[in-house]
Amino acid sequence: MSDTKKSIYGTIGWFDLTVPNATEVKDFYAKVTEWKPEPVSMGDYDDYNMTVDGEPKAGVCHKRGGNSDIPSQWMMYINVRDLDKSRSECTANGGKLVTDIKSAGSMGRYCFIEDPAGAVCALFEPKEA
Image (cartoon, helix red, strand yellow):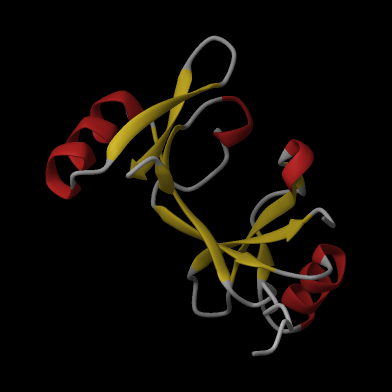
């Protein structure tokens, strides 16, 4: 058995839904998917990790604060090794930068991009372990 660790780069690391009414929408997904919402304090309001057996599977977030400029849609976060390089490649290859780089605190940093076809996703650079 090999103890070579698989790379996380190039994989989808997370899904978030950012909407104006996260409190109502998290209840919808709890009923439809059987996810259990667990509050994540954002200071004066809560966003939600949607969990299965205590394990987070996705997030439902309010379109406020640092999320106010995020498109309202299910957003996939793609893990990248070098966010600055990926942003440069995005614009050099016909894509657009939707947001500036945002901090995810101790987890890393991310931004939102639009590909040449108009589809939007997030690029996430995790902090080194």
